[in-house]
Amino acid sequence: MKFDKNNYEVKELTLENETIRYRAFFNLVYVEKPVNIAFQQMHIFAPEIYYEGGEVNGYRLKTAPVFMPNQVGGYMPGDLEQPGLSKFETDKVNTIFRALAHGYVVAVPAIRGRVQKDEKGFYNGKAPACIVDYKAAVRYLRHFAKELPGDEDKIITNGTSAGGALSSLMGTTGNHADYEPYLEALGAAKERDDIFGASCYCPIINLDHADMAYEWQFQGVNDYHRMNMQMSEGGRPSFTPVDGVMNEVQIKASREEAELFPAYVNSLKLQDAEGKMLTLDEKGEGTFKEYIKELVLHSAQKALDEGKDLSEKKWLAIENGKAVDMDFTAYVKDITRMKTAPAFDDLTMDSPENDLFGDAATNCRHFTKYSKENSLAGGDMADEMAIKMMNPMYYVEDQGAAKAKHFRIRHGERDRDTSLAISAMLTLKLRNCGFEVDYHSPWDTPHAGDYDLEELFAWIDAICK
Ligand code: DHB
Image 1 (tube, helix red, strand yellow):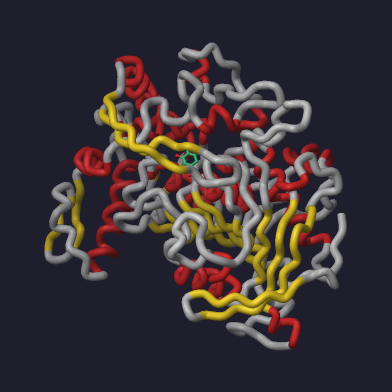
Image 2 (cartoon, rainbow, N blue to C red):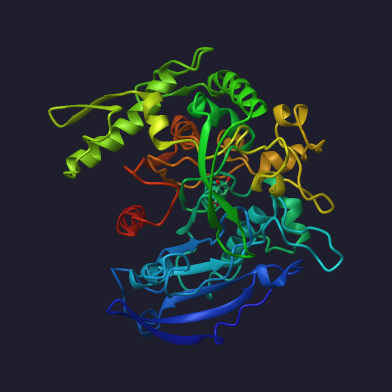
């Protein structure tokens, strides 16, 4: 592994009437023995004024936080990225530009994804490659910390969806021995890989329980409306509309998955801020459901306080400007179902997650007992360790996993890619174990990320200063 501090370019870029001057260290290969060199390297950017002794926002060369966004979507390969226009909303300036303008050092790793193969045709980006690469990139930052810009103790990861999942894993699995053999095989630096803060937008996590959580929320709604994903290498998904009604097998799966959820929630022994146990009875009713309703009501209340008119939301009871109650079933009908049951461990193994859990020689596998037993594709089961290493829930209580000091989790109020219960369970588990989580479900927000950069940066500044 190499880092040459004299090998850089100074760049200037003006977008939306704002000019940034920055030093760019390009194409830093972050492991000694890469298996996919194009996707095991990163770019590092820093405001050039730091090298002239100046400051931005009160930060200097060695005090600026290191913001580390990943570009992963759909568990596909995450590309290298530079300051510029947003890849998906090309009328917008991207997060990297904004973060540099705000004074952060920005480290952008490429990360392997589920479709990639070596020259012999063996897959080399299946789980847990994505999280292993992210960790290796952090270890590189620590290894060359003295020569790199930024404060190595203020590394903050950021990502959306599958990328949000990776950020949550970075925040929960620091330095854990499970990942060590993989890091060692790649020749990652022998350094810590724990981080200071994790920013996670709509994390697609807890994949081995996401099917049951989805059906707990969406059961009874049999029609689905979605955009089918077409993935291009390194890109985020592009979509075409698909509408339909679930078939009998899917409706049966929906009922059976929903029945599995209460036992799982109850096993987590979650508590709210007052210490009340959050549980579900066999019908899926109980204090945990009331808690999820509170999250939606809180979302609505914030929107009301900002002057939004929510009178069209018939499932919402508003009295004197207060969101006081909601009809959960009507809310779910209103946001509509996106995925057929089982939503993640597909019985025909056609989901991105089946593909994620393949191995060198197998493209797709199952990762839940239910779908393995009910498989329509005769699929194999993924390795237990790979499933564990992709799920932050298993590491929250594990003393061997260093946790981030701060988490920020955002999950849009009308996100249908995964149940609201999923991010809520991670938030509760972390809080119950004493870790700080800033959680909010933004009103009328679908599956998306980086939509509130001013607030995100305010959070980063508050935890770093
Ligand atoms: C993403 C979205 C999904 O619905 C999913 O199952 C996995 C990943 C994504 O956008 O990253």
